[in-house]
Amino acid sequence: SQTIHQWPATLVQPVGSPLSLECTVEGTSNPNLYWYRQAAGRGLQLLFYSVGIGQISSEVPQNLSASRPQDRQFILSSKKLLLSDSGFYLCAWSGDAQITKSEAFFGQGTRLTVV
Amino acid sequence: EDKVVQSPLSLVVHEGDTVTLNCSYEVTNFRSLLWYKQEKKAPTFLFMLTSSGIEKKSGRLSSILDKKEFFSILNITATQTGDSAVYLCAVERGYKLVFGAGTILRVKS
Image 1 (cartoon, each protein chain N blue to C red):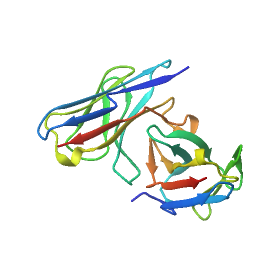
Image 2: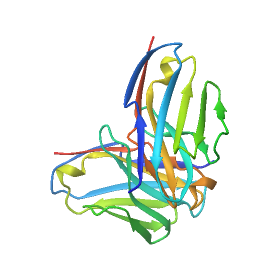
Image 3: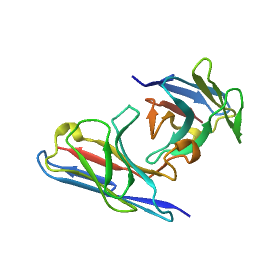
């Protein structure tokens, strides 16, 4: 069966420090991978998605970047964190570019607090 | 701009009550509408709806889509404290899901 791992679960970082959140998927190959952010009391906002190694699409301009160095690994990074980067970050995968054919499955999330 | 609006934003009921959660959307190139339940961390998948008028059911939960009126409802009958969660509605648009803000449901014993 497929599983998705995301770490760390919580993170407190000072403003201006770098960030690296990692997500890995097991039990499937060539998944579509997604990074979402959820602000308090808000829905999920798509930040990045990837349909293959090295292929990254950004949805909103921001202080973050994403990389996919391996088929089942998706990394969210920042060189210098801002206070506004605080939030709940969720990694997700789906088995098909058309979600109608395969719903998205989510990791447990990372609660990031920038202080 | 794509928009998904959920109502109510929050709801408090007693065990045994029936609740109806609403989701309306304005999305171009609509493909499907999904419902997720988020308790503490990862949203978990409940339903995917692609056709109007066909009810999907899982235990005490059911959902239906109306593509003419651009909305969906999620019903929960005989609510239990374990139903307390945030319920998220999302609409598929191409490669991504556009999410609503969610409905916070609290079921009191």
